[in-house]
Length: 175
Image (cartoon, rainbow, N blue to C red; front, side, top):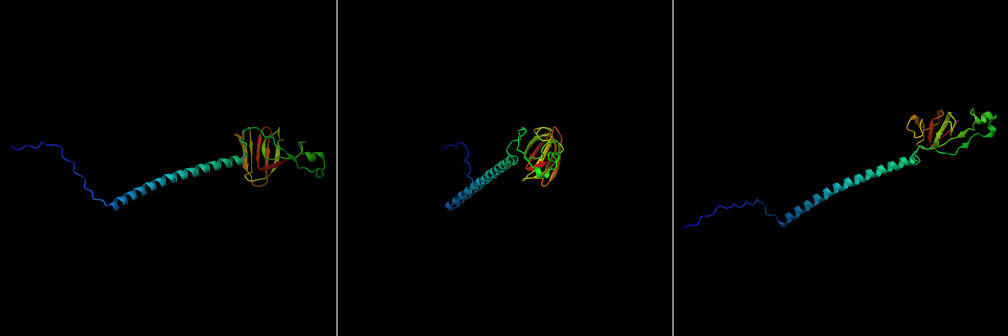
C-alpha cells in the first residue's frame, strides 16, 4: 500500500526578483547614501536658517537698547547737566537774559524731565543733535500716557505744561 501524503502548509512562493550583479547593488547603495545626504542637507539648511533668524532677533534687540541709551526707561526722572547759552553782552537787561520766567535760559538735552520742577513750562525751540532724534510729552513718568511724540529731523517747537513729563533723545531745546 502506498502511503498517503499528509496535507501540510504550502510553501510560500518566492517573489520574482532579478538577479542583481555586484555593480547593481553598489549603484543602489550609492543612491541610498546620496538620498540620506540630501535629507541631512535639508535639516542643516533649517538649522542654518533658524540660527540666522536668532542672530537677527538679537541684533534688533541690541540695536533698540543702544538706540534708547540702554537705560531701560525705568520711569525715574534723569538728572542731566545743562549749560547756559545766553552771552552776557547780548542781553540788554536782566529780564532779557533770564526770559519772562525769571529763570536763566538753558540748553536742555537728552533725558526725562518733570515740567514745573526740572524745567519751566512754556514753548521751547529744539534742534537735532544726532540720528533717530525724537521727543515725547506724557502725563506719567513711565511714558505710557503719551500726549505728543515726534521723530524730528530739523528745527522744531514744542510746548509743555506743569506736571507733564518731557523725554528728549538726540535733541536740544531752549526757551
